[in-house]
Image 1 (cartoon, helix red, strand yellow):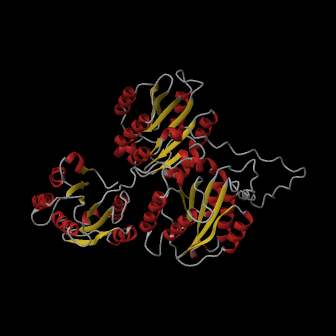
Image 2 (cartoon, rainbow, N blue to C red):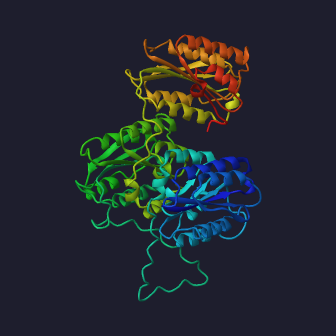
Length: 587
């Protein structure tokens, strides 16, 4: 039972994505059951002005019609006025005093007109509504966090495009997130001492406020009473030199959020640079954990987060682990994987870890990549992935967030469980010049597909082919996820023309070649962003595909960009409604 207002950005800068914005608003509507005793939703559209385009309503059809009618973009962006208008709707004549109040504001950039949007958001929140701040395009993460309710790991979300936020809501249980308790406002400051210090002289600058102190060890009445096995995986590469004591303090602050004990939390430790070392198996001994953290406070070498994750899994399933305890891993790093592979290697290892059951919080700062943190973390990454500017900002985030509540939230299930099927699979990936700029996205797409299957002699094997004007077999059939991830990264290049037929032909060589098995399902997936530009054109690609299908292989044809939908349909197995996929971009 909720009164909900969706505030839609209709300023001029979002003209290219206005339909995506309308689709995102519809996605939010679809996540709630509407009715007199359930949810009702209102709409506000804004540029430099804000207008109520639907009062609180229980009619999805009417709301969607309003969104289509108002899918326009012009003028400046006035976030303050939008929030003011949203507050009027959610407290207006159709509102219900016993209903939860939720505002979703969609923001495509910075405030361009009007007053202080953060002050306006604080007014809204002081009246009771929760605010989800959903940003895309040029929206600023810091501003989104300030507008959103706390914790911003739940209520603030930034993506490049609106359809990526829609994709996130395909996985996240929005109803559960909307019901999440908000963090209370900060405690009022302590009363001043009886003899306050003298004020600074006018000639000297005012002293900066001190940083938040480390969280003191929690007493049983305040600590999180959760039976959980926790592993902290801590970066100690050379780039961490100078902040190793901050890492120690951060780890202790996290540990002190939990009541330790056989029936409560146990904590283990892993430290990594090129190699990962288990520095403590699971224990409830705070003094021993503190001693270990201090002993391991040094920094040198390059980083291998994948090794850290691998050793973390050994800890969380090893000595002292409990079958009935929740499993949580938190990895802290300030950079990409620079040893023993690259970020794709870490992502592949994280995918394996998550299949074993633990939730992963991925915490990055410095030169760590937000996309890598999102991929390592459990879903939804708005909760489990934290990207910040410095270790101090990371500490500040966890100082405020209710980690106990977040730890109780189950991760979203993967979009599909690892598929156990005995199949030989080959991915045939375009690396012609036209995919320049999205090579890493193609590598990530390949890895995402691989991680949908359980690999093994009695399960799936995967091979790789990359093509431009010539095709190369870059991996014969394999069950080694790390090796496949490495090959995908090594081959992430783009140049030359496009020979889809050559890619298909090499793909069939893989399915008939080293490691192939008789009597298993044969699957080929070809990804391209264009048409065949070498001899024979699309017609030759279709002929080769027909020959492959006659040999018993199923073909998924995935096209984006300038790929011809008719060609994709002809290459794909039947029915093309399943085996042929056309999209606008690799995202």
